Image 1 (tube, helix red, strand yellow):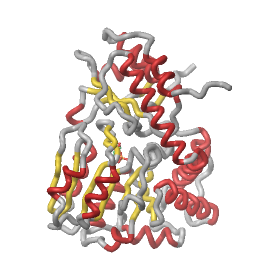
Image 2 (spheres, rainbow, N blue to C red):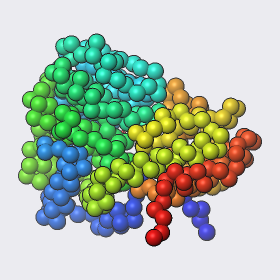
Image 3 (spheres, helix red, strand yellow):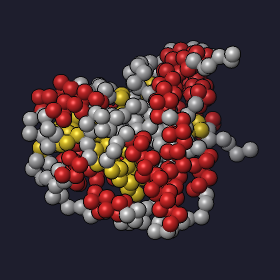
Image 4 (tube, rainbow, N blue to C red):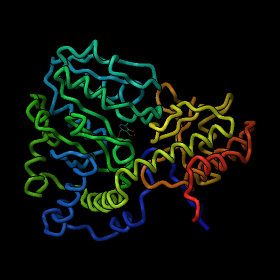
Length: 379
Ligand code: PLP
């Protein structure tokens, strides 16, 4: 039998069979009536998942492309923009904002910190745009976004949030929290293949668009196309159809139920890791429901360990990024995940560490995860 493959990374994530099935259907034309129906439904479902009344733009691009659209539309060279970072993705946004010629103020917190409103406040004066990261996938920290957005809003800034790995997994109230722009991607908690970028755009954000050169990523061009269900450029039609099915599944489960499931998955993963005697690098709290980041035991060659899991057991986890490279490994649990994905990941970690000669507590992780998940007991 060919080796079974398990994808336990924080993106791309496993795609449900119902979603994959649509990808196998013949390609449809994007200006035909069949596609328009699904396009319309997908855009409406995105609004529900993003919890916004405003427009949600669907771009054929990765999450970074969607984020670049925000920077391209909002930047006026020389105007002040604030980026708060405490990991790889925040740092990426600082580089991107600088590349567009903004007067960048980069509040660079230590990796793994959770940003607080007081980290922003001294730097807000005169900032036209504030860029925040909701779930910093490189560290596992999920920020308490509402007060951060409120502080930026109070100062009159346009608030842009990277929710690439949090949308659909962790509570995010775009309109109620006063967030102007939320950026996400199809390949994480939204359970679809990579290829689509998602951008919510408030009227204030639209009114604040600047003079930076742009064409493909010009928000108005896509807005006008979407209003007529006539995308300005050929969308990745099969992925749009797949995303539509995945969004339907998320809304059938219910967003609140999905958030609660992610909390329990995070608990199960953390308890399993600790039961093995390993140390967490991500916070040990319910908010950290996206990815569990584990400190590599001393002497472990993380790259070789992860390759062994992949080649010998078929289990794909992922290492650290940037300054945490070689020091951690990460287990993702967003989207199409259940308890037994977590126990499989934990069992693989245990086996791989033993194979690498690391002394750990054997046999405890799966039991701890089962307990922490709190399976409903039969009546
Ligand atoms: N922001 C966060 C928090 C992410 O996790 C990722 C992807 O890993 C990105 C941005 C970049 O998204 P993409 O790889 O789709 O460009």
